[in-house]
Image 1 (cartoon, rainbow, N blue to C red):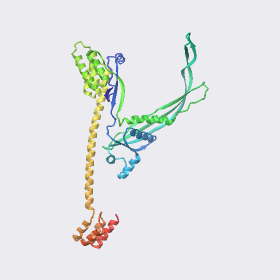
Image 2: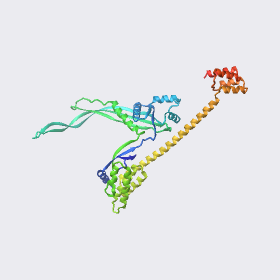
Image 3: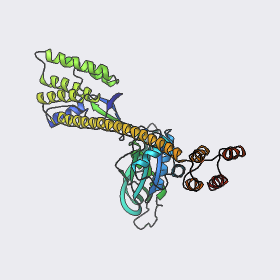
Image 4: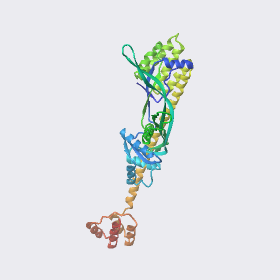
Length: 439
């Protein structure tokens, strides 16, 4: 298979007129191309965290997403466990609404994404219809002289009544990268499948009706469709399509065709370059063949993601032999280039966000260390009490200080004797004991 990169509609043949283009599609051999699409969201996560589900059928879609992520080996944190994490780390009161909380959760869980589902529509409908269709029916047999029987068929019209069950499901999925705190725009998904069940009637006045297909079965189809689309946000996906690649005998294009057909892009690129050099060096080569050589090279380059080089060669093919197919190929290549640039910019922005997150977490850790140090300085110990006594402070002042500050006293029997030996009065020792008792 040919491994292609994010390029839809590029690998098409070229001809100079509408009829020529149609003929080219019909007469040129086709290659099955496997196009690898990257995930729509550029996030690297090990864990999917599920937030609240809002709206009709959001629960069903959420559960399908949970099962789907588990099936591909990702760790899943459901809403119950997420709630426990928020409570354990004193984040429950803040809720999952601000970037700071996102970063806090990401720090606890690790590289992860928060997924929330909102149902915007979940309707079902049933309808019954009647119509006339045709079918072949056996009306008898004939036997030839050798005894061979042949069945005779006729086409007849029959009345049919059809029961139809449909579902209209629409949801939006919101994703937050908990590693960077980045909030992605919600993606909307819609699926409107229908299942039918038909019954052949015995006549126009036959009132028999087929049973309606189960609403739950149709809903399962809708949810599965939404799940398949939503998975593309997180996972790469493959598209297979048949495309035309020129295989002229002149200039060696057939060799490049055969190489590309077995999926060797590197060799196909080398041969396509050699094919173009060969065509350009021939004095009597037809413009059509030269245009094909430029087109083939541009196509292979575009498949490999070498968009600038591809556009240059496609433009030359279009100059030699204008036509809508090469113009479409150039438009698709430009779109692929723009998408690639967007991914590159996104990656750079994501890296910046990661750096900002690390800086934020480092600063926060330093602030926490400073706060802990300051708290330790404010916390009274036995040594602080002895120091105040030796400084000559009155008992009333020392007691007031004990009553208005955090304290971490050690008041075992040996500690109390040491305090007395250091001149600490009974009044102060009692205040120390009271302070420890009220903690």
